[in-house]
Length: 327
Length: 250
Ligand SMILES: Nc1ncnc2c1ncn2[C@@H]1O[C@H](COP(=O)(O)OP(=O)(O)OP(=O)(O)O)[C@@H](O)[C@H]1O
Ligand SMILES: [Mg+2]
Image 1 (cartoon, rainbow over the protein chains, first blue to last red):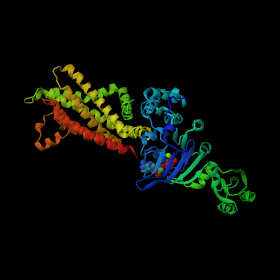
Image 2: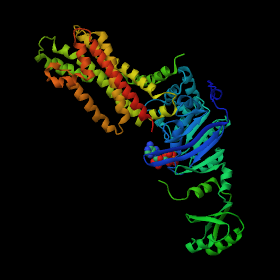
Image 3: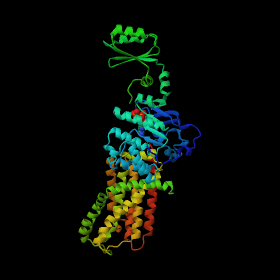
Image 4: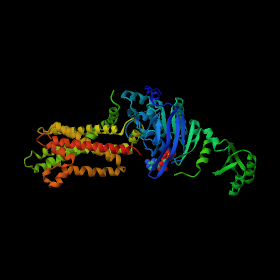
């Protein structure tokens, strides 16, 4: 995208260090329900941070506090050196947001929508016209610019939200589940957009439920559950940190009985096992007794398919947050 | 360079007016329906059977009341629904809070400015045909302008407060009936205030709409009434800003 304005944001911010976003002891309670609990983290300039967590973990609430929409019960947030609560005007110039819930005016076209959004963000009339045109082109929505946001498909709506977030080309972006509910094509298209933004050295906070998305796009990941940070680090570090060496998947010829499972669980090196739709997933600390496990499983129920792989972020996520359904 | 606060207010104004202009004809029509029936049924129909001692025709007695009632209706109805929609349906207020480098009171200022423009549009919609068909009708323009601004500020503020606090859209029309009905029938649009017993009259005179209507009817320039309406407007604006600010954050 061609950007015609330069805010000179980085030089304007009072930021001495590399830390673009600084969150300290952030908490939020809705009546008695503590939704975010003493969360602290930093995001360096140019870094992409993934916020992962089950439904209701407090990701959206955290992002809403970063924008100033939700007032924290306690804690501080600074963006580019500006306190979001004390200097909201300066802080807001630094970030754009693509919210989890899309919302559109009932009868403005998307060109008008973006124009007024640009005006809202403080651009002049002529800049706003220019920027809305360029951003529509960037999001490949030219053919649809006369439509209303509600007439767009899910993928186009997500691109529109991304376009809105980028209209002033801010250095910081909050992307709240930008790819949820999209087909593989649209998801890959959005990943390309986000990669492009990473290439442009944007500082990004991304929430997602797709672990492969986090592995691919995030330099660092924070896993939160019940409002608390339970793990953080680079995806590869996290994979190592829970101690899973490898993941063995077995598809038996006959279903395993619960007695069979107990037998398998006793082998040294087995951390835990989960059976799901006929298959068996075994997390291994080490591969020492791998051959015995396979032989025994084969004797107990036969083996139709077998797979050994490195743990993925998803395995780590399930290991840390458990398997029971949330909400 | 325009100061940031001013341009921030103007952005809200620009967006509201843009939207309003798209439906201008419809709004003009909507503004005219109630006054038209008041004039036709009550003013001309009933009015021909009424004579007010010491006053001109019943129709010209009613006119200031209908004009001011227009302002009340248009501002209150428009903004209570507009703000409700922006908050609960379009997600616009949320977007504004999250991303716009605009302070809540600057957004309110934009809405108030829109309210004033919308009120003048309603007054004109009504006055143009009146001037055309009743050439004898006279009104103090200065007073009309000052009262229109004052009432527009007051009732736009009321609309903002209601729109931003109500959650259930059904309550919007319920509250609207409780606001506009009593005002229409109590504030002296249709009959002089001396008809009320003294204590009731004092209560009714405390309503800014009553003061505006009485002021427009008075022989001399209504300084007191204008001051009263503007003071009430200032208070209402302050309350609206506070409540808007409070409801913008979760
Ligand atoms: N305005 C509110 N009032 C009361 N409770 C709220 C409010 N907003 C969020 N919550 C509660 O806070 C908790 C966390 O919600 P949040 O939307 O932050 O979760 P999330 O991690 O974004 O979940 P998801 O992955 O489903 O989007 C939930 O239990 C939710 O019910
Ligand atoms: Mg969420």
